[in-house]
Image (cartoon, one colour):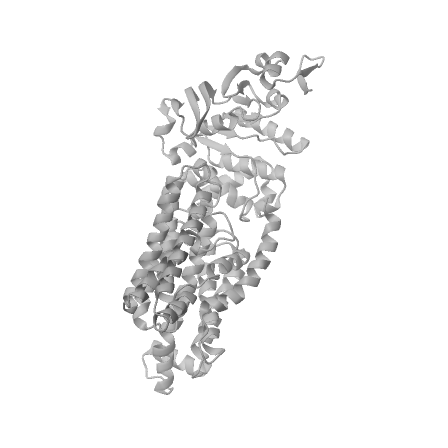
Length: 254
Length: 337
């Protein structure tokens, strides 16, 4: 299945953020969305999630228009992993993950034993089953990001969309989340994530989409599109490239 | 139900039972536990109770309706507070956040100003609460903003201030000897004039609103997430929010119409209940209902027994609520980002 945006004009009622955007994400593939702050990454993300209607153009999911799906149908196909946040109420980790099952029940239903089994399975998958009874408010930032990933997977979606999943995580947890992103693609999910670090895109993505001032400045396979010239143009700053003997590349800012 | 919720539910139930017993036994005509037991056993078995008929009269005719309505009003305000705190993702929100109380207050003082009957005044208060919240919702919804919840709360504050000015205007125009004391007494909250015929107009809307909220209990959990997350999880948040606000407003307006403005219950009780049984609305709603009913029964018993004249309920709940709120503010703000 393919999640795609066609000639999108994105933005809010009072202003346009980006124009003429075409983007496509296939299942089994990881797409990284890169660009400076204010360039429209989050707006594009929300438009592809169906949380924000495009001002013109169309988002399609397979052969259907995303706008024609009910919120419940949409949630069974696309899951959203927001940046982790401080929750207002101290729900247990299990309750947070079970919220991922919402779209699989009806308006008045509560989580079933099948839902609980799925929650237990995804908690196991991310190695956080021991946190099941802990309040979500009392665990670390890295653990919260994994809980939100587990919640997304509990939706049993085809696509997972992550908003800066590595921001505000320590180095070890960044690596953990990047590995999980690869694992999601390996299990057949289409993954879209935004990041401020081109190295994270290098590490986890198949393709990159470069967005500046609401316009696409480049798109393509990660090894081809992420180079010194492209990134200097994207961020408007000088960038140094580091190569190792196996031909891998990393970028240093400044 | 999870095992860990049982102690909390037991505490909440114990508070309600204690409140019921005290409210039925304590007063100008004290009823002993044995007498109360005899009256209730007599009613249950159908035999004539072995207690003086005066005791039976005090329990069923004098205190019964007041006890029932105190339990209902306390439960209703606490449930509405729970729902609004979840919906607005803020544990410091109370049921009158969208103007239900100020709308009901304006309706009631208008009813008193026009010298209407008790039922007409209650109807005015009920409709006033519903209209105020509907107005807040329509105006708040018309403002296109990124954070619809914040706009709704701010609109509630603004409309509440306007309605407060309206109440002030009517009080200013009112007859200072007949109407003004009645208005003041009503605005401070009281169950002194409750009779058996008040139970149905109070109980039916409270039951309807509570049942709707109970049916939506799992959705209420998800609705306490940021709006975009709840939508991404598959909830149509707009219509659900209307349903929850309508249910909570129905419950609040019915209480305010019967008992006047009683603050603090809807703010304080949900918080205590949350510490007892956790934030899951499936247990939180029953726990707040038990606790809220018990709390208002205790307050109302104090109100009619501590002095020769009845103390308005709103004053007592404020005396209890203010120190609690300050403590809450100090402890909750630590966990806010």
